[in-house]
Structure formats: structure tokens, C-alpha cells
Image (cartoon, rainbow, N blue to C red; front, side, top):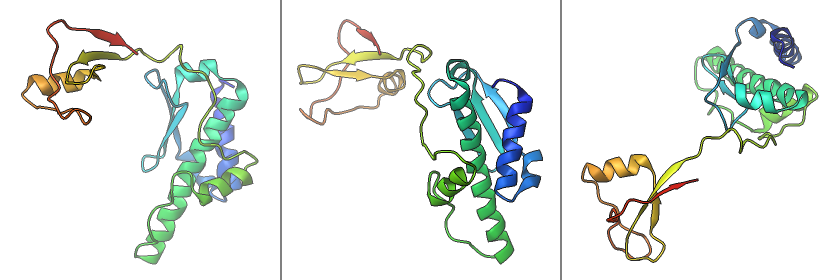
Length: 178
């Protein structure tokens, strides 16, 4: 299911099922090459769905279809709540929870299982993370991110929770890829 028309048709179907057919024209779809963990992401206030190009290519039609419906339901549940709040001219309570009962009900109403996560193996497309081994009083030491290395270089100090000694850069830099 890579055809834009199929994606648009799915969005229209979900909007019609939710009783908000006019929303189908307002929801936009963008593609991201940087998303390597989640198949899709809904930007509620912008009425935007971002889909992962790498995961889309790995996943089957069923997973891709589920993703479009999943993210569309997030947007519709949010806007239904926002319109209710606006109509009352006061708060309609806190916004609905991302995978709460309203979202689950709409997913089921559309004929889909309300699942939180996809099951696509993304290990081949995820970038390897660089970690630096730092020392403390413990035998194992610590694996530290690039951001933490920069903070430590700027003078920030961190203490090991186990041995309570300061975490320091070793004399020989050790890089680990995870």
C-alpha cells in the first residue's frame, strides 16, 4: 500500500466512521527518512501524520494500513475533544490519553485492533549509537552518550549511583557501538 490515493482513502474512511468527514481534507501526510523506530507519528494540533519511509518499505500492507488508521484516530480523538472544549467555552477536562479508551473505541469502530506498537524488526535500519566508556570506582564503568561527553567537557560533573565516585574520562578513549 504505497499509493497516495490509498492512504487518502483510508483517512477518509476513518473520518467518515468517526462522524467527522470534513477532517479528511485537513489531515496532511508527510514522509520521513529519519524515523527508524516508530512507523508513524501524529502531530495533533497541526493535523499532520508523519510516516517512516524506512519502516514503510519493510512492513507489509497490513502494518502500513494499521499505521495510517492508528495515527488518523489520534488526530480525530484530539480534535473531537478540542471542539467539545471550544463549544463549552471552558475546559472539557484534560485532553484524552494517547492510547486511551476514546482512541481504542474509534480504532475498533473502524474495524482495527487498537495496538500501540508495530511488530516490524527495525534493527537493520536503526543507526548504531556511539557510546563512550567512562570510569568511576565500579569495575564495569559507564557507557556515556556524546551529549554527556560534551557536558562533562564543559565542566558538569556526574557521580556514579553505585559507588558514589565521580565519573571520569579514562586515559585511553574506548568507543562502543550499540
